Length: 182
Image 1 (spheres, rainbow, N blue to C red):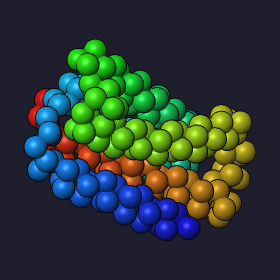
Image 2: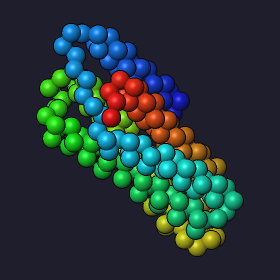
Image 3: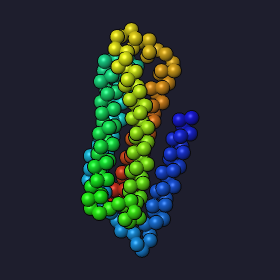
């Protein structure tokens, strides 16, 4: 089911990027520079992917304190990404770029907004996983949780989703950077 959702997301973003390219040749197209804070948010989301990878390794090797620490760090970095994206939108608005101002600005808001929706969904799952990890502080409780196949699958799936939204942002950022510049 997750693979189907990922495929649908890839399809949706591909259609939007193709529409962007088709619309860009229009005579009324005016490039809008990317918010500079998007560069920082890219670093943050890539760091969150690394911390989640470390958290998974800790979980598999029964280092549950380290798992909780890196899972919490991932949650923090994901939340920071959201804040930075909102600051990026604010930067655009302070420059007079709104959703309805220019086609270029509209695409920028829609693409980053749709991606942000994916991040928020990921943060919900990360929050649930973090809450479950914090409820299982004693080693025995954490170990019993870690050997339960449905729990292992749950962690594997939200990790896959998080890495997907990270790679998706990197692709979007590079696309937008190529077409908009900073």
